[in-house]
Length: 322
Image 1 (cartoon, rainbow, N blue to C red):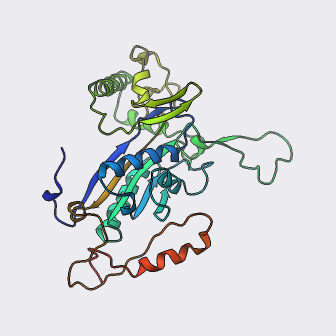
Image 2: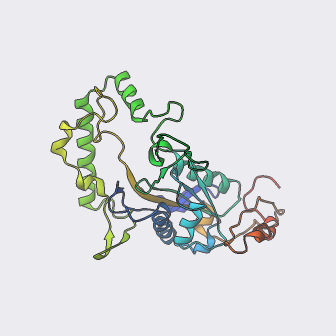
Image 3: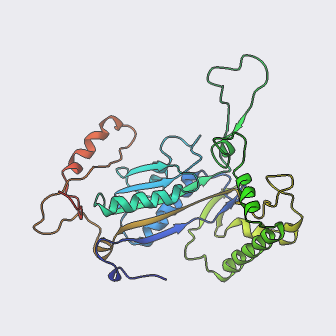
C-alpha cells in the first residue's frame, strides 16, 4: 500500500524511492560482480524512481559486512557507480544482519533533525567474493602448518565469542527450545520457496527489482529474477543432511542462504517530498547550524575539510534547536 506525501505531516520521514537487485546465489549469476557493483545498481535505480536529481542526495549510508578486499570506502564506490556526485558523502557500516536496517535508521535520525534533505540508505553484499585471509601473513610463517581463514565465515555467520561456532547452531538451540521438528521446518521451507516462485511468476517482485547486466564470455546477460528459488529442488528437501549439527533439524533449505545482492532506499521529510528537494529554511526563522558532511575525490583528498566549510554555515531545515 502506497501513501501519498499529503497524508503525512511535514516532519514525517518518508521513502520516495526503493530498488533492489535480484538475489544471486553463491558463486552464481553475480560471481563476477563486487558488492559495490551491485550497490551501484540499486542506488541508481532508487534515485531514478524517487524522481530526484542525484545532486539532491545529501549523504549515502550502505551496510556491508564483508568489506575485505573491496578497496577503501565501499559505500563511496557504490555511490559513484550509482551516479551520485563525487561530493556526496558516504558511510559504510556493519551491524551484521542488521546493517542495512541500521543504515535506514541513521538516515531517519539525520533527516529528523534537519542535517540533510535527502539521504540514500541500503545494504550490499557479495558473499561470493569474500577473500581468504592469512592472519599471520604480515610477519611471516616461521615453521609448520597454520590456517587460512575464510572472511565470509570468520566475519560473517560465525560467532566472535565462540570461535568456529556457526550462527546456525544457535538456530538449532532455538529450534530445540521451542520444539520445532525437522518436518515442520521442511514444510515451512517448501512453502516459502513455493511462495517465492509464485510471486516471481506473477510479476509481484518486478516493480522492486532493478535488473543487473552481467558480462560473460558469450556477451552481456541481463539478470531480472532471484536465483535461489528458481534452482530449488523441492523434492530433495526432505533428504538433505543437517547443516550445523549431526542430529540437528536445520538444513540448507531451512536456513539463510549465501547470497549476493543489494538494496537501496531514498528517504526524505514529507515536506521535501512535496517540493523540489533543495536546501530551504522557513521564512523568518533564525539560521540553524548543522554538522557538515562532504565527499572529496581522491587526488585533492588533502583539501577535503575545506569542502565542508561552506556547508557548516548553511541553515539546517527543521532542526528543533538553533
